[in-house]
Length: 99
Image (cartoon, rainbow, N blue to C red; front, top):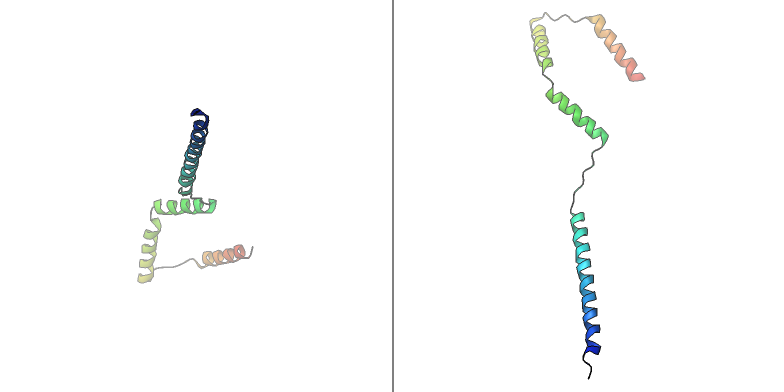
């Protein structure tokens, strides 16, 4: 009676299947960890907008003081705008708009 004749084949098949299972689990773990990562892509326009917004936030509020002064001049009746300068600015804006 030969006992060793049949004993190696079933054990080899078991070890081959076990190696495949371990390799499959490792690959599944890599795929699942890759799938759970979030990726954010920011366009160049969004970056520029963010930079502009930050610059506006960081800039001092010098216009606020000017607006207060002009408001007081209008209320007191002492505000005298330069009509020529206003007209030139309106014409310039229209020409720029038409280009």
